Length: 144
Image (cartoon, rainbow, N blue to C red; front, side, top):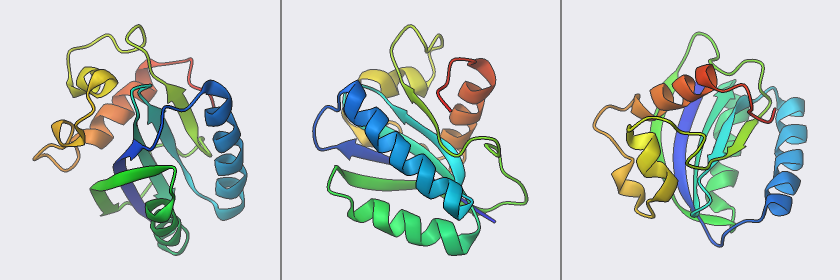
């Protein structure tokens, strides 16, 4: 099993309706392919996503994601072989983040308003996954 965490820059600011339409499609495809994960959008135009599943499903999906014209500057933060899923129950958890959702001073707070993706990249390759897992554990309002 593999896990890929990446950041990307939206080509425009997505409305809630656009995000929900994309999410419906993502969830349907992920359900068919046994992919789980979480997608966060900061409203300022940055996505962060974790994809989990069999390498034969996740690797081609990630290659398609990199070619998707709805975003650019795709930066892989972490790619690892894993023994188990961290987001096993989520075909694609989602949250359009706002400052009232994030209550700490970590880089997740920076993620909310910064348009420079490199500020979220850390020397700790697992940092983004740790932040997303912490977010998963703290929130009950994620859209599944």
